[in-house]
Every structure is written in structure tokens, then in C-alpha cells.
Image 1: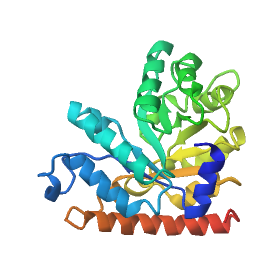
Image 2 (image 1 turned 135 degrees about the horizontal axis):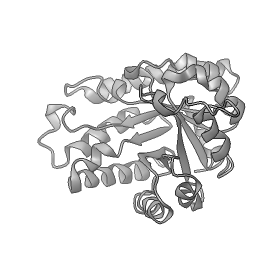
Image 3 (image 1 turned 90 degrees about the horizontal axis):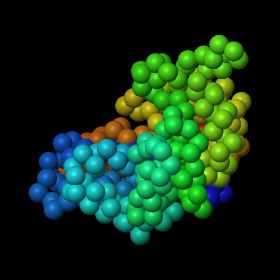
Length: 277
């Protein structure tokens, strides 16, 4: 999926919502536990109830890998279902991979060929040769970790270079933006760091940003939009627990749809306010 297709879908749905499928088997409703593949059934119900409000889904791979072969079957079933039923959806593997080149090449093969994701999150610490294998695939995206929401982000990401006073996350943006283009590289910026988006946009004004952290993590959608939106929206904002685990009864999917619509309606207003619709 190229950037124009993604932008057109944002305008069509009046939404830049990504729903994180952090589908913890211990948290899914008890009514599903008797299913042959309870996690896939949970995902399917959530997707059917929310797809008209979302432009992207983001399975967190850890919740599937932790279950071994059963988890991979759930993941494959989820990807196949989205691709067959809702092909306009942008599908992100939240895998945070990043290793030496030949290893990254195998990761890229897994997520872009075997599973047919549109994008994968990648850690930049090992440099360009660990990222470039993912960039070899046409119409696929690398989403590079830039500035994250967790408290540990302060350990390294705000470290300042003594010579030029550049913070580490800014150096990541400056250097890595030359590895790809606005059509195949995005960046992760946590919603709880929304005030930093002003500085980030000075470095990468045209790239899409994947912004997790609204909802349960306390980030503000309005602040993210104020500092991060550009003339092509440039934002994919993720909510996970606040939508998929909004209810634990047999009405869980209906409640997820209601919560997704609330977020989507706020996004539509922001897009209209910024003259994107």
C-alpha cells in the first residue's frame, strides 16, 4: 500500500485510527474460551465491529509468539481474514525487529512474504544495514522506533550529543530519514510525548507517524493532532486496550465498536478542522 492509497483511505473513512490487536488470551471474554481458536474468534469479532472506523490494525506479535504454534495459527488466521475481507486496511506487525542484515532479511521474509503485512515496526539501534532488508520490498513499510511512551525512554532517547546538542531520538530521525522515503518509512512517536512532535516535524515534516498511547496509556489525541498533523494527515494513532477490552461480556464486540466510533468521530472533527476533508 502506497502513501496515496493510505491517505485516500483516511479521507474516505474520516479516520486515522489504528486498533492494536494486543489479544491476550487471559483477557479475552470467557464466553470465547471454548472456541477452537479463541484468539482468532476474538479478533474476528473485534474487526467486524470496528473496521468501518479504522484505517489500520496492529497485532502485537508478542501476544501471539508467547503461545507458540497455537499463537502463530491465530496470527495467520487474523491476517488472512483481514486481507480477504477488508483489503483496504493497513496491516502493521508490531514486532520491533532489528538485527544484522541476514537475520533482518529473514524477518522481512516472514512478515512481508509469509504473512503479507503492509508494515513492520523496527528498532534502529543496529543501524542502516539492519533496516535496509525491510526496505527492499515495494509498497511495504518500515516503522522505525523514534520516541517511545514508556518511562524507560528517558534512559537513552533524550541523551544529548555534547558537540551539537542533538538528542538521540533527533539523531535517529536525521540519519535514518535518508535510508528510505516518505513512501516506505514511518516513525513511532508515543502519544505521551506529544509536545515533542513539534521538534520532530521540523526534521521529518512529510513522514507518517505511528502514534501509540492514547486511551489506556493516557495520551491526548488533541495534543497529538495539534503538534503532529500535516497536510496529508501524517498520523496513524493507535488505541488498543481502550477499545478491544472495553467490555468482557458477550457484548464485547458491540462495545468495542462503540468505543472505536467515539475515537473516529473525534478524528473526523480534527481532519475537518485542519481542512483535510
